Amino acid sequence: MNHLYKYIKPMLIFISSIIIIPILLTIFNLFKLRTNKVIVIIFGSILMLILGFLTGKKSQSKGYLSGLLLSVICIFILLILSLLFNSKININSFIYYIILIISSILGSMIGINKKKK
Image 1 (cartoon, rainbow, N blue to C red):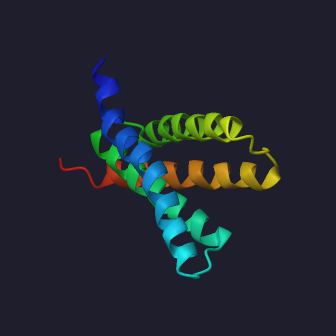
Image 2 (cartoon, rainbow, N blue to C red):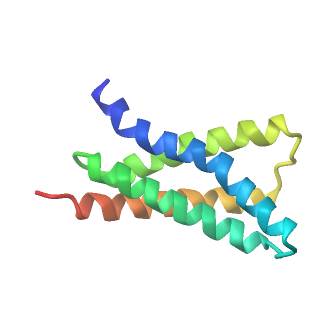
Image 3 (cartoon, rainbow, N blue to C red):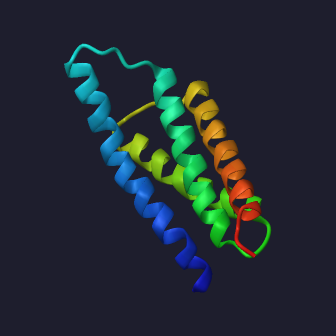
């Protein structure tokens, strides 16, 4: 149960960002500022890097496994949401999910190395 607590704060941040980032992109689109798919990838990878960092700081050892578990949970949530909204899963989304996994693992490895001793 103690291991579960280190994932609660990053998951709350992730779920709130699922709501906030599309709203921001819609506001940009209303003001005729074109949003690119690259911007979505950058937002997602920075978010996963930060979440991995937070998880890595709370891990005892093997930060890459904490980041991998966090990213698998987040990607599972994204897959369920994409299936709910009838979005097709193709090679582009698969590559996007791989980028999210790698950035979360890197963030957790950085977080476990920056942990106060």
